[in-house]
Image: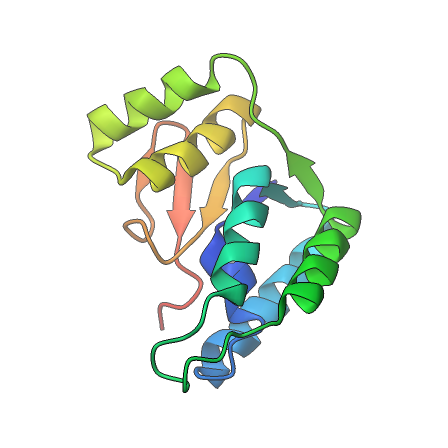
Length: 144
């Protein structure tokens, strides 16, 4: 079963502030890669670079990664994972998800990748755990 990873899963791999989430994210990504099931949306790569290079409010203003390391890690993700790019019609699918399910705009856009590319599962902590949105099931890997 193919699965799509939200930005938060990618970022937690590099965030030492929550060791449990860091371990869960690393293991989930590694396992999914071995199974050949993992895909990443281009949107999440953009968000990953922004999130990891932004100064943290609770860490003396330092970022998780410096820009050079973030760029290297994003390129590495591109080499390891199948990357999904926006397609014509996907924007209207995102609008439909945003309107129908009351998702945030960025969550609706991520969901539209899964819906458009027929990905059965999204791993994220930003949606309702185990809920079906259209044909896509959301799983929060950080739920105990």
